Image 1: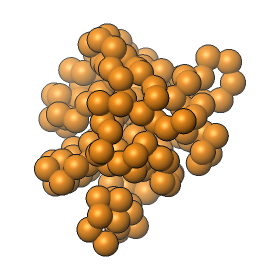
Image 2 (image 1 turned 90 degrees about the vertical axis):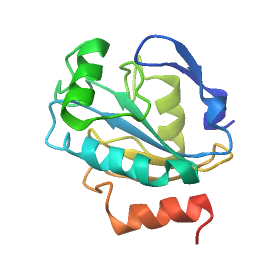
Image 3 (image 1 turned 180 degrees about the vertical axis):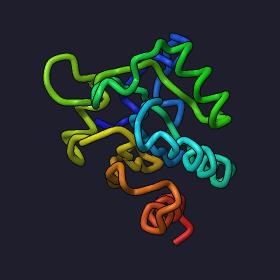
Image 4 (image 1 turned 180 degrees about the horizontal axis):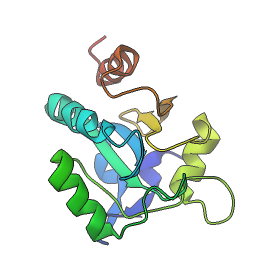
Length: 158
């Protein structure tokens, strides 16, 4: 099983098979609009713009699991991200990322592979074949040299 075996709802509610991203490197991030780490949206957008032509896709998954920091609707989230951070990378419908009842199948898979997110803006790096390559906690910012090096290695630059 790989990440490509999952389907999720885009932020507009349309279904999206993650198999559409086969052959690309993915950075899966659980996000929130009212968190101390929320300014990472700017860095994630910068990563997306810097590496998308080389095959990186940032995928944002809003979640209200940590501190109730994503209370808004999908429309609210989309507006917030566009207005405040000019986010153009794909965003998805809110889901539960923490373990236990109601955890999304996608995040249950990620948790089983590389551990559970401890807070918002936890990052999972996914290889071109859908394999989970690594996980980076919230404090690892999008411009962190270790994250950038891992992305470049996954893209085949190292």
